[in-house]
Image (cartoon, rainbow, N blue to C red; front, side):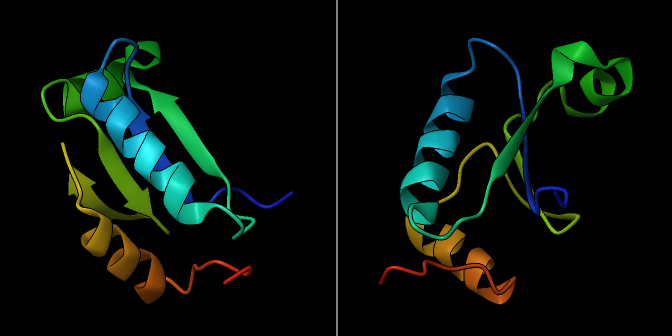
Length: 88
């Protein structure tokens, strides 16, 4: 299985992370794309880099957003990456 194209740096108890993940799940429904969550508390380098900036959304290795993203901005980033729904 190929690696996920969508990565979200998170940590437990982060409501902004939960909000971003929920928006991703709704937006990606039917696309077949998976979202990988990476807990910054599990890696010292990730923690040092993102401790005050989560969630961080990365698509195809490119940082797309920190903290929050609107639905239109998320859809634009996914479309730019060629990721979209297949059931529309």
